[in-house]
Length: 457
Image 1: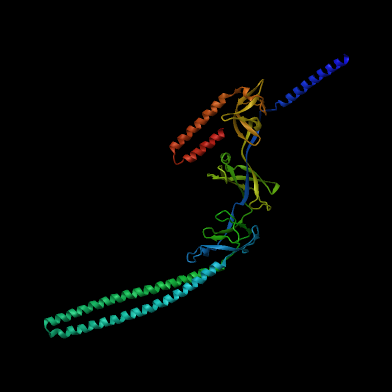
Image 2: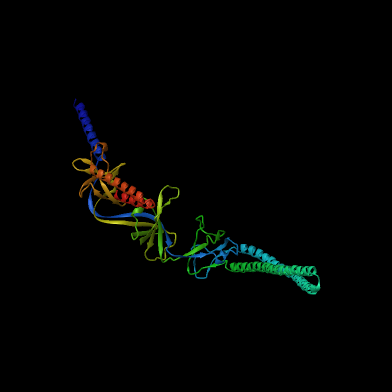
């Protein structure tokens, strides 16, 4: 009997311990993590990745002789090229262009010059022969006129009809003499024109040969000053290399960047670009030297976006001027840029984890006697904190984890939602009015209003 009672007591104790255990576990599972709304300073930042470039550089281009139409060479290949990244002095070898193309064109030009010389000699001979025949004809016509004049003089005592015939014959040869003079002048001009034309062609052939010889001497490209050689890119965006073609339309072979003045070229997405302005301070770190921290400043923001590769998203080019000089920095090094877009003092701020959102509103879980869903009007944010414009007060306690059964929690602050809705409608109305007033500037006006609307949210 006593043994049976002992078993019953042990069973009751086990049940009680189990209940306590499960209740403690349940309590720990539903433990609420909270935070306070505080006032303080917040920096709004935009993080981007960029690439170092020289702000100024000198281009190494194809010889200017290649631009001559008389040369007739529109593209030429690179036969040899110094290694990229090499540091060169002024006058040092950079590249050699293909001599074979010049030699082929030069050989053909010399053949054409020989033909032009023969053509000039033929033109002179033809001119001499043709004019000689016309001179003989002119002499004969002059003799005929003199002869007819004598006949007219001798026929003074003849009958009127004989006199009339002699005068008519004289008039006929006089007209012929005038025609022969005009014909001789015309032939003389034609012959001279032909000789001049062939002489000009010969001169052009000679000039072409001279220009080809100068171009041949200029095919060895040398550095205009001291610097580091960086290959240029072709029309397809690929680096220039041995075998690549260059032309007067794509003349840059390489560049010599000024490494004392560097910039970081980066791209900012269309959501954040409205926050970026000239003059904003930037902190840069170099992926190759994680311990280095550089300072910079935004000095150029693109007005027109461009699509990201393999994406529908748009990005805008932003240029950051790097302060100071460091000999370890090289072009094309990757930078991590932190752009400070705003510094706000004495602001109500909360952790980003405390904010929840649905399709129409943003809200937090405010812990008072009971937890309520509080609609809030938010401002700028960084990677950790968000500014609160309306809906909360300093010292308010928020939950960082969503409570159980959120559908049963009361929502408050609908007046904030209504204000936000009115503000959005007003912005839309302003946009429509700006489009009506200025159809040409509708894109610019729409972008400005859209950015303002995003900021207000």
